[in-house]
Image (cartoon, rainbow, N blue to C red; front, top):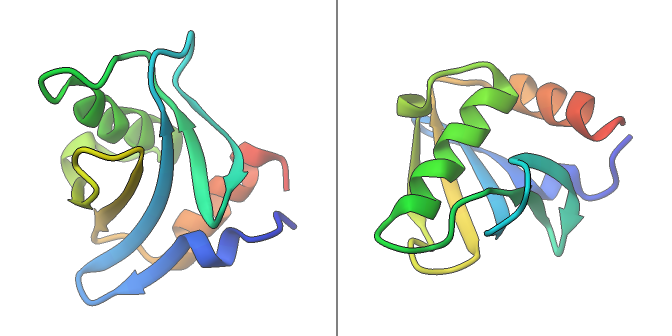
Amino acid sequence: MVEGLEEAVREASSGVLIKVWVVPGSRVGDATGLVGGHIRLRVRSRPEGGKGNREVLKVLGELLGVAPQDFEIVRGHTSRRKWVLAWGLRRGEVLQGVRTLLGG
């Protein structure tokens, strides 16, 4: 079990809210653990002109096996701490996908 994951993934009326802590300028795009109730998500892009935010959606899509268009940043557009809405997914699906990625 991944400690604190339940806090990072919440049910919403139109999908699932995922709290992420973004580390821009990384070598690879992946999820590496939890930080303060957020999933630590590494992205290659720098936060310039929305590139980092677009890559957040792309990396989440790749990690969870859904299209980037199925995600929307709903809070934290200019912050490392973001809330991302996953349209049409269930909380259990997201939790299972993240647990698998983090080895828990």
